[in-house]
Amino acid sequence: MLEDIPNLAVQRIQAVYGPDLPAAASVLLWSNPSSPPRRGTLGTFLSHVKAWEAVACGTETYGVILEDDAMLLGFERLISFPLPEDAELVFINDRMSPGSRHAPPTGPIMCFPIAEALRSLNKTGQGVGGDGYILTKVGARKLLETVAKDRFFGHVDWRLLRYSVKAEDLHGEFAGTRVSEIIPHHHSKAFPPAWGVLRAYCLNKPLVAFGTGGTSTREEADQQR
Amino acid sequence: MPVPVYVISLERDADRLRAVVDQLRPYRFLELIHVKGFAGRDLPDPVCHVLTGNVWSHHHKGTLGCFMSHLNAWQMVAESDAPFSMVVEDSAIFSNCDLLETLQLPPGSHLVFCNRRTAYPVQDAGQAAAGVLFRSVDPVPAHIETHGMAVGTDGYLITPAGARKLLEYVKVDRLFSHVDLRMLAYCLDQNTIPAPDTLRKTGRNVLNFRRSFNASHRLAGYTMLPSLTGRARISSTRVIEDEAGKQTIVTRPIILSDAEQADGERHCDTDAQSAGPAVPPPAGSPFGQFMRGILGRISASGRAGR
Image (cartoon, rainbow over all chains, first blue to last red; front, side):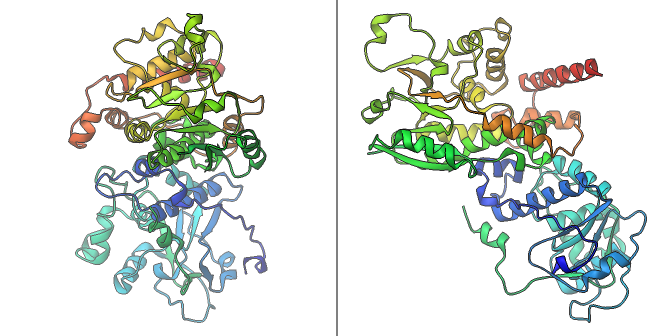
């Protein structure tokens, strides 16, 4: 599908399969003494870190990171909308968009503030999803430097969202809502991650949606010792 | 009961694996098990930093991958029912392996280096002729230094208890530097080793490691005669992976903040670890001094190079 879209240079990132990591190394990377590593979740996190590295050392100013179960929704519109000048991360998936995956994949795409994504998450009760996001070179470098300190506990998509908001963004309208319950607490107590590392946006309409019906590599790997 | 032999080899190195299998096939009492090696070049930079506690470790991804490959082997040994196993790398060449059929390790031992590089000269010719000889590893740091060699992990014998100990120790001490130096260091007695400045190169690093890690992290270790393994004259996978890993370096070296330094120190202190993260490490612990020394040396040499 991607090959049919002009002006895309597709690069496959060899993912990290969590159960291949030595158990002792998983413990170090997971960095949460109170919970044993979920190795599929850890592998997913590290796979995204590899993708961030690919963006950071690439020649383009930004890259799009897709998981292999992402379904494209009018993806050719990707190159037709302007990125805000300060954007470092843009979630392009349906779970982070107020638009519907079921709407016709047509019409103009524009960036919305990340607060729109928080409202969507509160409404749908879904996870953030790492199935599709745009990451700039600068954003990738910031992520790489930040995770070296914050380590790799938990779900990478919620970590991305944590890096996309400031703690005070969850006050006011979002106080007491689902996102304000999850984002501040989804981490190892020994390594609370940074807030507001990136300037992040979401889209009015999604360009990708997660595939349904297949098995999740992450969940399958989580079941392994 | 067959003696398990864990052969560490990258998936892409089928030829090397086959060479090991061909050498060991005549020994029917050996059970060969492939341990999938870990390609260091695949490790993202921040992962290297977290695993080693060292901000320069992304320059040595092959070294880290080698360490992780041995972790995989230790995990398998730890779960084995055999009294001991042999762990070998795919660059190993073998001799005297018939001894393994009836070999019994010294009671209470955890690790026996069975490679040529750790086989320092025998003082007593009578003893040398007496069959298998298990000897103290204390002279090994000086021996490898005078012979310009590394310790080597081309071959060692390890018990399940030894493997379990190693796996527990590295969760605290992390995976900095070379796995062979680390293994030897754990076999030395912190109270009896000479001062590190009596040696200058690899041996000094081993002694420094011994001093920097918790003294209770000890293995009952030996070296044996005759040796069972040597290293073939082929290129080092570790070095290849080190070089390949440098092509993907992204992050700038980050100088550790005091808090991060303290974290590194805490990870070296088993008492603090077991008591929970609230216990601060003593200021200026050996690990901290060691790391600062390394950073200082690198930083100084970097300046000199400009």
